[in-house]
Length: 515
Image 1 (cartoon, rainbow, N blue to C red):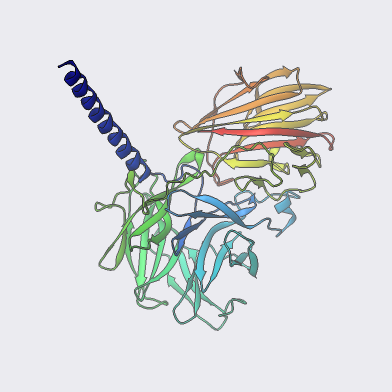
Image 2 (cartoon, one colour):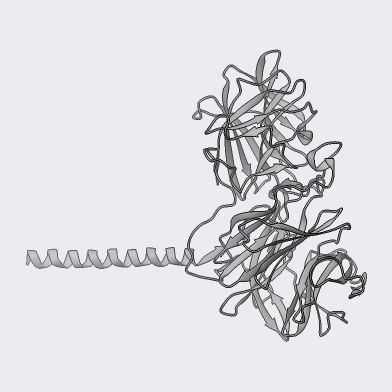
């Protein structure tokens, strides 16, 4: 009898354990096959996404940062990895190098990404000029194909069935023009027509131009007077119009006055359709949002059956469970900077090095400037919501008087944790929009600086350590903002610049990130 009881107990325990494991596996599989919006809780605005076979490619705006126009790759439309940049630098004027001015809130904007006859194409404008780049391998080198000496705002390319190549562009008033078929320039005798006049009233821009089932479609962000940002679609049987209009999404996901808008349509290999748009999220930036797209009477309607963006939904493509990150730690042990890093404006490549002291990033000062906005070689990564933190380790023994080095929440109104050298002594100060809020003297030549970001309140806290173990907060909370002066989300920024004498340097041991 005792053996029977033991057998029964063991059997029951086996069944219970098995059921628990099945439940855990089911929950894990469910988590793997779903995602939560925003798709990427970081500043990845003006997205354009295409599918080539079973691969998805995305491009975004990076404004005044270099390298620019990131190309991202995904197998499931959810997990994205940066695989290249379209350009390393743009050299339209000395201002791109922070000489005689700057290009804050300008630079590369709202690119169009296309694939046609074995070649990838990117079109973008900078506020001064417009560019077309091409590549056979999107992860490889991009070649400059065409420079147009005028800015064509928020443009989108369309390769038509008859070989014609069109470009839709504009704000409020939308035009379509035609390129030469070899893309040597604009066809001055080709199509050039205003297809949408200054109606409907309000902001209308961010066009994405398509041809589906022999109809032409243009989709835009529309910000009606007194309303929320909304997604519109126009369609026509002819490329030159006339076009009819329909609202295809008007939803703020419960975030008042922050409508989800401006983006693209994507299909899957098995015929499902999706939309990828973005939503303003204040200090963290403009974040991508992925949603279903359903065709109703020939219109691509976005959102669920009620026209709402789902908070949680199934992945468009299942079976790819590799997690990817757009913000990462770096021990600076490689020969090249990782693709998640971008410089503020064009860098001076003579004033930074990964080779002079292997395992460290060396940042040298090259000229005397007044503030972080004028400083070359400020190195940045995105921040991420809802919360994240970054730690940077600095070695300071080769600073000169007047040098300022540290970690910033970089935007048009930055907060910084800055090491300053004055009369041979080093001090650590916390600044809020350029105003010193707290100061301590540093007795060591190595310091660890930490920035904790909370995007539920848009506040950041700065702390320091002398041993990477015990931390002390310096100053109070810093309130981060998003403004049109830079038009980018707050970034982790590592900087070093001279205010008195050039020639000093700091060595960065590591940047470590957590979220």
